[in-house]
Each structure stands twice: as structure tokens, then as C-alpha cells.
Image (tube, rainbow, N blue to C red; front, top):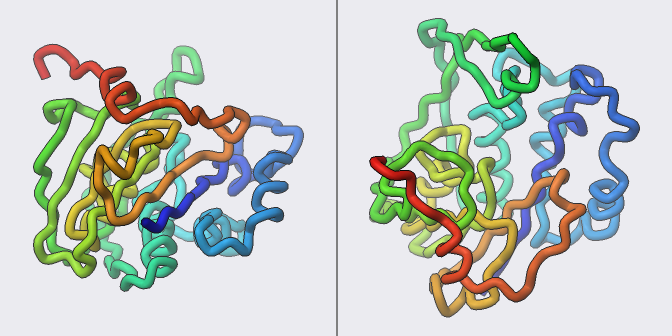
Length: 247
């Protein structure tokens, strides 16, 4: 069973001249060392397309990063999704950029500043023409994403190009697949079945429990300081999640 690892760089690594914190070193030594050591390994992705699009000379209206959020935008998410799809031999997803009615959008950085509400004005959106998948399982009963470890969501797409079951293990960058800023959203348009498991660890019984044809582990540069746990089983991880009451 093929397995790939994808490491999302810190926002400060991609935008060192714009990031509001004075970081002592970007990228972090551990990310730079890891990238140099195994950068030629085809089973490892360091989001080169995202790094390239984030350079000062390449910045444009379709920014790969949210302005008041630590996460990437839908443009950065699609760039990364396509990098993975090409790596495994599938067609990249084509989407067009279109104007939309201006709207305020908050982000997870707003609460970092006391007595201040930060918003960005959205003028552009991505529109894709791919067949939309159907959500067939959600241990959170459809609750709004809250970053809880152990949550599992499965999407089904009978018209997908790859008749495979892809298991994505990751965090909010992969997400539940309900928004174009979540990696699962795009990957569910290319694979017959995609399961997302929110977890910082790969369960030791991942093959037996989920029976995937391929596994994608999505990590983060800022989480590289934490050693992986090689004792967690899928049942234990999923039992850590409690669906919000009344959702």
C-alpha cells in the first residue's frame, strides 16, 4: 500500500517579510534539515508549489494564504492538492478564478490581538467543474469543524478518475472536505472514496481498520518538534472525539 507524507510549511516560512512576528529563523532548522535530507524522496512532499507562489515576486490577487488566518487560502490549497495529484499520476484539477460580491471574512488570528476584530475583504473565488462527492459518514454529525482529534469523515465519488480509497490523516489543513480551503475537498474530486481522520499520529492498525488503497499523512512544520506515537490504534484515536451536543 503506497503512503505519502506532505509537510505544510509555516506561514512565516512562506511570507518572512510580511509575517507580523519577528521570528529568529525561517524556515525552522528542523524543517530545513528534513527538507534537505529527504527532499528527493518521491513519497515526501514539501509544498514546493506553495513556497514558490508565496515568493514576493509571485504574489498576486489570488494569494495562497489567508490574510487574517494562519491557514492557506483556497488558491494555496488547490496548488498543494494538485502537487499531490501529479505526484501520484493523476490529472491536476482545473478551476477558474471569478469575481464575487465583496464580503468580510474573519480568521483564527483575530483573537491574537486584544480588543481587535480583524477581517479581510474577499473579492475573488475559485470555481471548479468537477463532480462533487457525497459525504457518506461523519462522526461529528455534521458539526462545524472544531479541530478535534479523532473525528472521521468519508466522501464517495462514483465518477472519480481514481477508483481507489484514499485515507488522509492530518489536521485543519486537510479538514473535513466541506470547504475549498481544505485539502480533502479537492482530493475527494479525484478519488472514488476519501476518508479524513483528524490525528497527529498514524494508527498502527491503519491498514486493517480503514482498508485504504493509499495513505496521505499531512503534517505541519510547527508540529515537527513532536515525536510521533507508534502505539495508538484507530479505535483509541476515534474514541478521543466527542461530537458536540445538539449538533
